[in-house]
Amino acid sequence: MPDTADFYPWAHEPLDLDALEAAAAAMQDCTLSGGQHAVGRTMALLIAEVRRLREVAEELEALQAHDAAIADRRESIPAKVVKRILKGEHPIRALRTWRGLTGADLAAKAGMHRAQLHDIEHGRKRGSIDTLKRIAEALGVTVDDII
Image 1: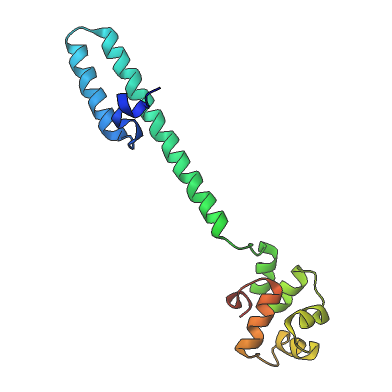
Image 2 (image 1 turned 180 degrees about the vertical axis):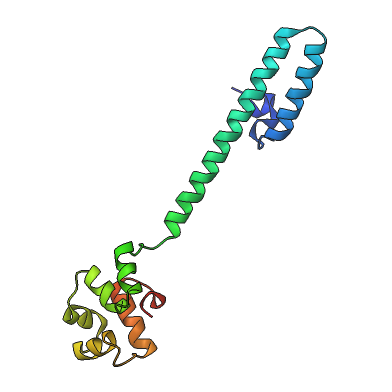
């Protein structure tokens, strides 16, 4: 059986909806002025279908963009945790409790002493970049999220 491309070589090319709509509108104008109402109605239906296809294509594009954004996105921090941080709670403490970890749990996961973590959470120490990276990794967030 022959491929549809043998009969319709344009069938596998992207459809130019603007050009199709313009051609249908021009044909509709010609046929209506010539008194061929059936062709004019057909062209009106074609124009309506092109517009519907354009809406479907836009919806598909939006869904694809949404899916891509979801695939590229890491887990979101809940609004209640962000509010706690904005009210002044140390980000590490807010994120730690959100994750359901004790200070000792997080310190062990980050490979540090819990007293050191306690001092960072209470602002007594800042922590080195290496320490902050390990804490962020243990919490499953970026360093930007904890500073």
